[in-house]
Image 1 (spheres, rainbow, N blue to C red):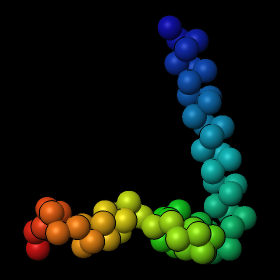
Image 2 (image 1 turned 180 degrees about the vertical axis):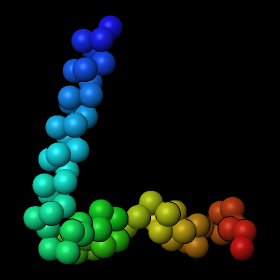
Image 3 (image 1 turned 120 degrees about the horizontal axis):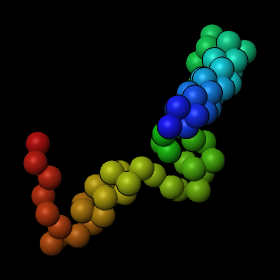
Length: 69
């Protein structure tokens, strides 16, 4: 039982170390946005966030359920 706890702690510590190295070597310690709407390649392909796509489809159909404000 103790071996599993130590191995798990070691794996988490190694992961955190890699994460910290990445943060320190990034410009201003920031990461690019992971949202679909912030990706230029996705916008060029016409791919949107699922919430935006749902909203567009509801506008097109007269039988769609109306959104609450």
